[in-house]
Length: 247
Image 1 (cartoon, one colour):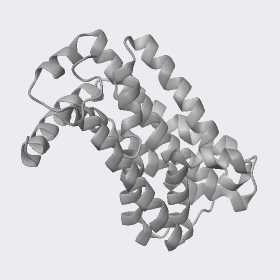
Image 2: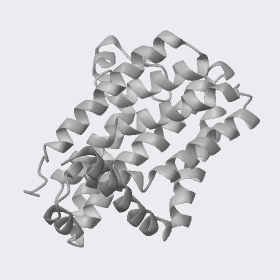
Image 3: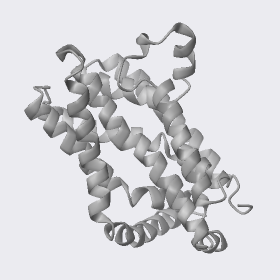
């Protein structure tokens, strides 16, 4: 299948799924904006001002990565329950088209949530956010988002029922949060756990965004390269159709 054809299919499917997502707009916005900002306020009173950037990044990582994993996995679970997944499998589309389209239908809400959080952090918590960083931040948020697509796909592909998939997604979310230090620097972990933490894309996403906000170019380049590697790996894995036809 050609790249141009795949892109056209992704665009068509995303528009269709966006209409479905907007039917639950209030719930989506409430969860993706109010919930993370609530966490930002809650954590801010417990940490010194010098660590506020890390708290901000942790909140954004929840919006761009953890919610992405859960939303994609749970959408696949709902599609399986309603037999829509069987329809997708029967169509002449690749699992990449299905996965990217499903994830893209939630991306506008995640981005809106992240930028609302950034505005609140800049106005209420005094975190410096130069306008020149905005283009780099947008690119960074998209890279972080892409680096976790495969996790949601694997949960949705291997789970057979919505309840099972939801349980898997919550368990993985807890593990990712615990072993991927998004609300605190990775150096806070014991050396053994640091090795485990660096196996997760969320750790590198956190390092990447902190590097952008603090203007540490070498860190941004190094973490960005690792995240790009995760993106390539996930897309290869998804393209191979792991449990796509057999699910």
